[in-house]
Image (cartoon, rainbow, N blue to C red; front, side, top):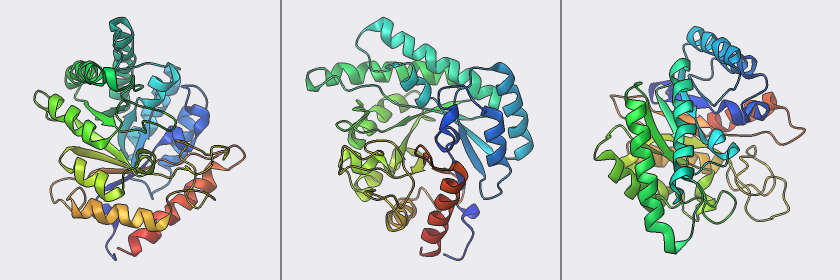
Length: 304
C-alpha cells in the first residue's frame, strides 16, 4: 500500500516490553520513554506503572512535549503483584481491583485514555462460570472508576494452557465478558494480540472475526511454541525472525489485511491504536530489536 499508515492508525509501541528494565515499575522510566518520543516513526506509546513519583512527573512532561497518543498497560502490575481480577476469594479480587485503580490514577497523570488489563489465572472448568462472573464484576468496578477520570478499560486475551494460563483466554469468552460489561460501559473493549493467537490455538482470522465488534486495541508480536527449552518459549514476545518463532512479516501482513477486512482499520471517524509488543531477550539491544520490528511492519505494509 502506497499510502502512509498514519492515515489509518496510531502506530505505537509497548514501552515496558521494549525496555524490560522498567517492567517492574523501577528503572530508567522517563529516560526510555524519551528514546521512543524522539522517534517520529511512532505516533503512540503504551506505558506501564512506575513507583517513583519523580519519574512519573518527568515522563508526563516528555509525553506532553512529544505529541504521542498515550495508552497504559496494567498487565505488568497485575502479573508482578500476582493479582487476580477473576479470583473467587473476595479479598483477593478486591486487592487486584485496587492495584488497577492505582494504575488508572497513574494513567490519568500521564495523559492516557485507556488502561489495559488481563483476567487472571484460569481456575478450571468447574469454576469457569463463577470466575467469569467475578471478572465481570471487577471490570464493572474498574470501568466506573475509570469513567470518573475519562479513562476506559480494555481486556486483553492471553493463553490458557501454555504460560499465563489465563481465564480469558479464548476470544469467544472474551466477547461474552465484553457484552456483559458493555451493557453499562459501552466504552469498554477488547485487545487482541497477534502473538497470543497461536498460543490460544486460534488463527488470526478466527480471532479477529470473533472479536471484531468488541476490538478497540490491537498488538503485533511474536511467540515461540514448539520447544519448551527455547529461551523465548511461551508468552515472551521475542523479536520477529527469531528461530522457532510463529510470526514474521507474512503473519503481520495477514493480520493487517484482516484488520482492514473487519473495519478496525480503514474507518473514517477514528485512528485506532496498533502497537508493537516486542521484548529483547537478555543480551539483545532494545534499539536494534525496535528497528527490526519497524522494518517488518514497513515491509508488511508495502505488500498490502
